[in-house]
Structure formats: C-alpha cells, structure tokens
Amino acid sequence: MLNLGLDYVFELALWQLRQAQDVGPTLIVHPAVGATARRIRQSPELGLEALAAAARMSAGRLGRIFKQNMGVALSSYRNRVRLERARELLQQQGVTTLEAALASGFGSYAQFYRVFREETGLNPRQTLEKLERSRS
Image (tube, rainbow, N blue to C red; front, side):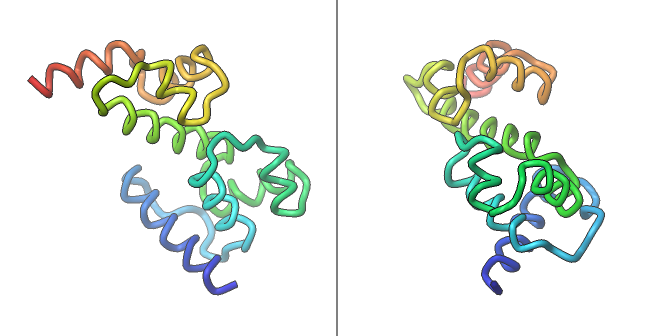
C-alpha cells in the first residue's frame, strides 16, 4: 500500500514538472489511481475496461476518481503517455510515424494523428520536420 502511495506522489510530481501545472485538486490519493497510472505507463495499449477490471471497479468510477486525484481525465492521461512514448520512438533513426504510433499503444494511425493534433496543435509531419531541422 505504501508503494502505491509513493508511486502516486512520484507520478504526480513528474506529471506536474512536465506539464508545469498547479498540483491537482486533492492530496488524498486513492490507491487505484497510482496503480492505474503505473499500468498505463507499463502498457499504454490497455483500454479503459481493462484498467477498470484491474482496479476492481467500474470504468465510470475509476474515471471519476482518477480525474479527481490527478486533475486530468484518464483518457487524456493515457493519450499523453502514448504521445510521449511515440515522440521518444520518433527520435530514433529509421522509425516511421506509423511504427511509432502502433508501438506506443495507438490502435491506428488515424487515432494517433487526431490525438497528436489535439495535444500539440501540429500534425506529426510538421513535428518531424522540426525535429529534422533541429538535428541539422
């Protein structure tokens, strides 16, 4: 139980550092939140139903508790973890956008493109062009 709490504190601190946001709305953590965040980092392809089953609660309840504790919707958190992994993969030479999208847990290139554009305001090609220019 202590490890779940420590996992959550670490995850929250790391998340806040990356997002440069204020601390989430609550300081009391539900144990399922830390475990769910860890599961998402380990297996970002897991869907909401699988995450809820692992937490032994309904998808709706897990989503509400997660948002209350983390300050972000579960699906948004999962998409951000997937995008972060895709960005890391895209920085490797020879990895295509489709390969990075599928390896990071997205079900299709269309889903990856939609989420990428929503989160960054750019499309993947524009981002790759910027990355190539910065390497030069």
